[in-house]
Image (cartoon, rainbow, N blue to C red; front, side, top):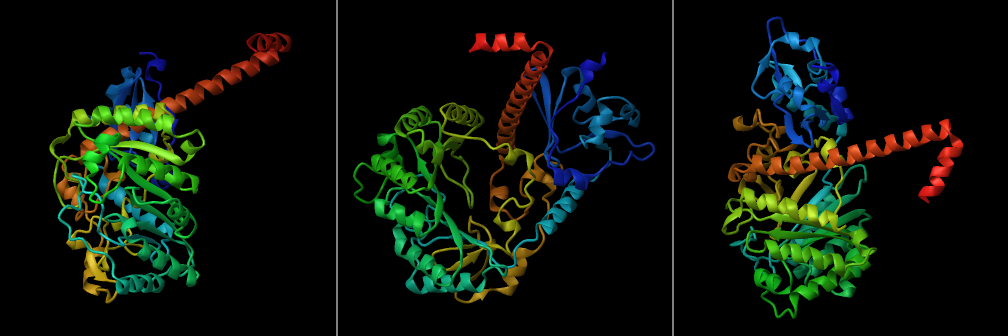
Length: 495
């Protein structure tokens, strides 16, 4: 077999922080073999195998002839490291000693990253529910059955006092995510908290999750200028008829779909970015494609700079902290179609992908992994370390403060669930063993797999296009140096 058939191509070197900390891998112990790292995911794409290391975030491409050097489940003798590509694969941690404790290595490395981050002293991120009341009755809402409750004036003042008492010591900005219910059903509560922050000289930024139905032109401007909202997520379930059928607004809202579309225009005009989430199941799939076409035509090129559209599947399972919808949704077939919708959205210029999210290792998966600087405050003033609000994550309230015993339970170190220890997605998922989503949703592997495959293909395509462009430019430059007159003549012809 010639050397070209075994050549390994590095498409992206990985997260430099992680690669530095991982360092050079020591040779295996005498008599010990080597195996593929449990953190390597492989995918065949356009003539080569893409290999992605979910811990180092490195992306490689391997010719089919060499793929048996990194087969899953095989143990190779250490002698394979004398030849390529095994030698390079081992040097980059894609092959590891047979008995390497990889989950422990990951946890230790993550601890170092968290320490180097130097988390702020004080709470910097709040999810606040000014109300659990909502003017819609979406059949898939995970808050079904929750008691409707609006923050009282007293709880609003207690919430403001709690924020001021726990402000960051180094005067960092705080960030507020207004959630609900429908937060716009309690604008007076948002007004008061923002007013109190300004009076206290606390700098803040904000975002909101809303159905978008209750904005006026005046409120859109207030959201941008006084509430400091930079981004709002709004859900569309289809065009006018399907949207009205699924949202089931309780108020006498005239033309709800067109009301929301008008408000998206208003929010963008006020300078707020709008993220439109298209909730998708098997019943509205065709409608979602038509909705994408509508959005492409409805919003101008300038408006699209503030508009991000993406499709998301509804789950079929029911569990604490999860969406609820009819059986049959959340299937592999639906997930495949949702990926097709998202690819279609990108082709219509309504989406963008940031490769940085693929190539950077997150030190914190969710707010629970940094409870000292993240908190959810519900409409009753209760404090939670998780935005799904499970009872095991409750640790006090804004009036009485933090319960020391409850806090100890919430803040104790995470443990890795046994079934997750050797999962390829562990470094980019949560190892938090009390997470309600992890215990209730048994399709986490398939969900992560679909997302990663899509990101790997996108990244490989973009990187290779960039490499081809650079190579073409290099050849053109060399041709120009070799024959300046001919290159100039060729440029004139192309013009």
